[in-house]
Image 1: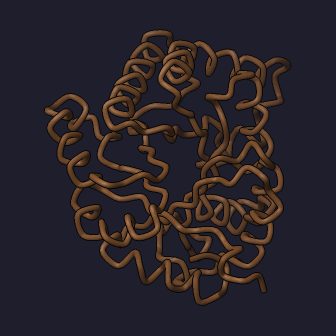
Image 2: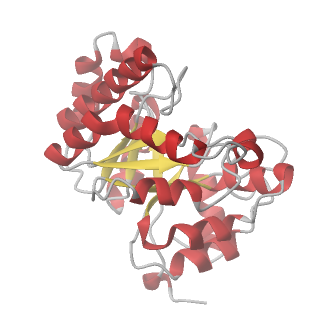
Length: 275
């Protein structure tokens, strides 16, 4: 087992309210942080600047890597309808506006690939390329804006059964502003319930394109977002795969029980995998 000084430092995905609770823990090691207030349409269409100002106050003294979870409710980034694509572009640009206000350098967006796609996307010749083209149409202005403000878009697996499809999609932009995210619970659900490879295979498939990891546990039946240790994710295998990377992805515990997030962190630490 590696010495504690050799293992990565865990971060967290928090809302404004739970950041206030865990502020000291975050600042203690300048842990990576993901703000989860700005994927809500109600927030983005409301007084989001006041929310951002309160978060900035809570982050006084913070020098770690900061990101946000971008909007995702109610849409996919590969819509065939150009009017829908325009709305999606607008929402994601709103997310980047929040990034710029906060000084965030990363925004999570959701993969377009579904379980249905795995079995059906290649039935019709050219369908995979057409999906990629639609994503490019949706994200063209978003990627340009991200590049201009020094922010990465990281594409998170949701239903993805093929660990490589999303990686190839990210690479197709040929931009340092588009990289890859892995959600451990989503990957484990796909493994157990849909026959996808184990979580560490997703890490290996992403390689050094991996810039972001949502750490959450599940039983593999559904998307639990449990604290690490409460499910059946094989954490040693996941962290061994992460240890093979040079990219140093942000490792963010993303769970429903944000109040007790440090219990999940303590489980990973007790395994000697991170601090």
